[in-house]
Image (cartoon, rainbow, N blue to C red; front, side, top):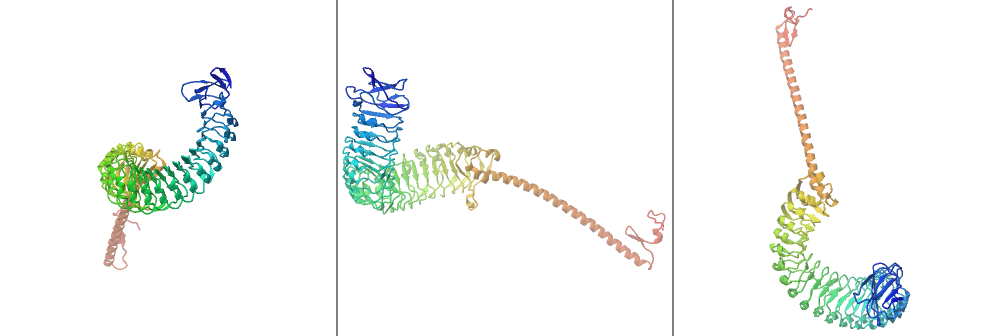
Length: 637
């Protein structure tokens, strides 16, 4: 660098625009400095006592942090950088903190980094690739390593066991593979081991119990297999232990009950089986216990009564059975309880009204029975309540209108009955309302439009009647409306029709011929069909053809049918008239012929044989009379 004044230096640094540099210099320059870009692309740096972050502008190019004097530079924090790490970085002898996280730094870690005296190396969320250089093991003072969410590949170097001061090791979200080195058990100062979402496989090394200071062990979302070593019951300092989304199998070791500091155990989406060991109840500091989507069975131990601080309990999608123990009444801090899709039976806890902090309760698809607890409407913070596909009965209380934080109420395929209280409209945050396949009757509450956040209304296959409330057209966030299988009728309100244009799913009747009971709603349109449905999404096509368009074409066909019937009636009438006239004329002629024949026969009998007989207009007469010249019918013969 070139000094331009006592406290100013022109520094040859070429950086991408919008780059930030934070740095502190050792004595004699022990104050922060700020760099300003110059027209030639260099930077003018000078000491300052102001803020620690300084935006600087520069041209694209290589990354050189070479502020004078190089040997006394302590930390470098560069954001928004787009370059490679140069080999020259090894000459920055005084550098002990290097933060390149969240930048576009690419390339590999130069081996020259071993020459530094780093105690903190953060390159997470960058574009770095390559492998972890074994030379990192020579950075004796290193206590923080973060290569998380990078493109780093290769395996975990066993040599890192030499980092006796290492406290934090983050490799999550990288492409690191291979197995966990057994040699790492020597990292006795390690506090956090985070290997989530990597390609690591193999088994858990039993000797990791020697990591006496280990607080957090996150080894999730990878191909880890085998069992949980019983020796892990000796991890005296462990607070958080997570193996979810791995291939771990076997049972939960009873020795885990010795981890009296354990607050969070995540085994969800693993192949863990067997029963929950009662000893686990001795972990009375539990804050979160995730056992969902495993092969666990048996019942919930009574020892769970010790979980006074339990906040999150998830046991859904397991074979855990039995009933919810009475000890649940004492879990005053419980915020989330998932037991859905299990064989758990019995009734809902009577002390549910004491769970002042509960936000989510999911009992869906269980044999749980009984009635809705009277105290459930006093849960002021409850956001999600699901008793779908249960044997829960009772009526929906009007007091539900006081549940101001309720977002989802799901009771489909349950035995809940009664009617839909109009007070549901008082729940301003309500987003989902589902009660299909229940015996709930009555009409659709008009005040439901006051629940302005409603997105899904799923009330099909019930016993609802009445008409569609025009007020529902003001539900601006509505995405799904399913009402088929009821006895709703009347006109489709114009306002609601307009709102239906924005729906993603619309089922006022069911577009099927296999289940006629679903087509029990009868609507007619109050607006012209062609104009009304001109801009409807495909989701509402069943509505178009099943309801309004059908009514339109039925009306058209009915009109045509009436016209056709009138024409046919007129033709039949005319044909009948013609036939009657024909029969009348024929009868008259027949009568005349019959009468004439009788007269002729009579005259023949009165005259001598061979006497001429003349028939005129059906009458017989003698020849003299017939030739009377005075008769206008006289014939000259």
